[in-house]
Amino acid sequence: MMKTRLITGLCAAAASLPLSALAQTAPSGHDSHHAAPARPGAEEWVAAEIRRVDLAGRKLTLKHAEIKHLDMPGMTMVFDLKEGAATTELLAALKPGDKLSVQILSTNGRLTVSALRR
Ligand SMILES: [Cu+2]
Image (cartoon, rainbow, N blue to C red; front, side, top):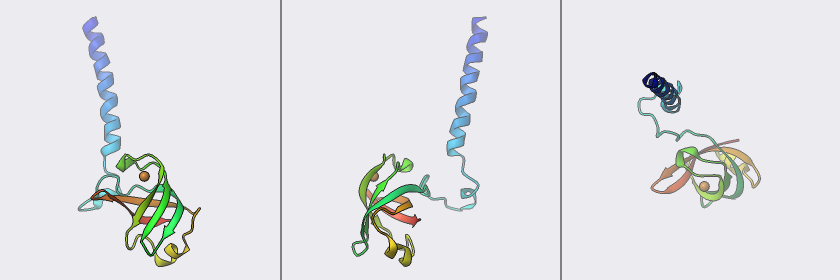
């Protein structure tokens, strides 16, 4: 009796765990056709609000939401702006208070906005 109960309990636990693990690690349909997929989470779009624009210095101060793939909670901080992250027209129009979606890359400890969209 006890043995049966124990096994049943273990099966229920084992059945629920792999499912959630699979859901997090299984490649999406979009990524699966890339020969060399980017680092996990690198294509995550993060909500951000502009605080300061420094196009000459290629820097953006953003109040960003949680960045899951970097394990970073929401905060206001300065990012480098990668060349080609957005069109020249879009960059020129950026101003404090604008709400955007950004992709953030971490390269040698430096955080860079690699893509940016309204
Ligand atoms: Cu941050």
